[in-house]
Image (cartoon, rainbow, N blue to C red; front, side, top):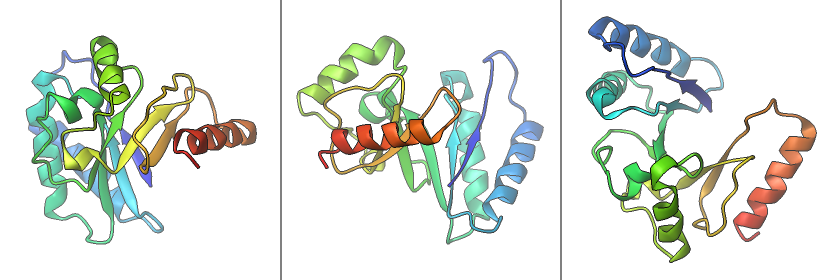
Length: 168
């Protein structure tokens, strides 16, 4: 799976030209050999949501049927601020790290046996090698993000931790 990170400082106007160019680049990636899915990682601020929604709608118009379309999602988007519920994506991966102001509320929700309110968010989770949490929902695909360069040692450690978190 290829991952595309979209960065914004939140001050620039996200134009139709920027969206068109971004759609073209992501679409090109989706047609490369051996790509089974593309994941878009964009922590869209409230003012950027229309741009992001339109970008995903534009992508889906000519998206290859055999390539998955995944997005990362702030955990709050999957529990309380469910603005992503109608996006035409195959999955939204709740990021369970760097949760900011919602950190304690989300951790308590998961600890008490709560789950994500959107079906779209119930197939996978994202964790970070430097901020692991307990009480993860089980039986999910786990995406592991690393703040450092991956090494064989960090891969082995991440896999061991993921298996322990998933009860295997």
